[in-house]
Length: 165
Image: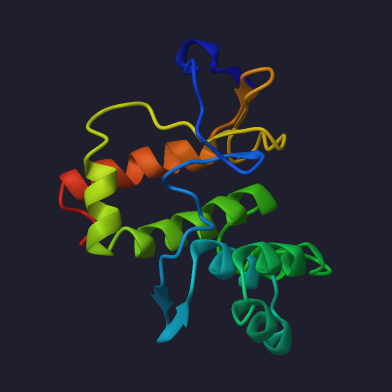
């Protein structure tokens, strides 16, 4: 697990007790997938964990992204149906592919696209104080995989190179 301490800012913005990131998957960003609109990236990501249609529909109709996340945690075997069938061999690969798809849809939205491009070439790190070392970096020990930040930087490059339209 990488140490990101050299990038740690002196001050963090907070929303309540949580660190606030401008690119949060909890922020409104209606994305369309197969003619279905999901209110946020979080709704989409959590709904894609299940292959049970009624479960997917319930998650996508959650009133808040936090509620969608709680529902997604209850999916019995998250992403299991995708392993092998999608050409991906592990849950981690599937998780990353689903998030990448959601983010690529999000950054088709002009306002979000502009925000991402306005980061220039800066390092994007999903700092958090809730211990998520997979998608981000824990502010307490500066350790994490920062998969969300890395995906955002990949998508930013694709936009610049006109590969994401």
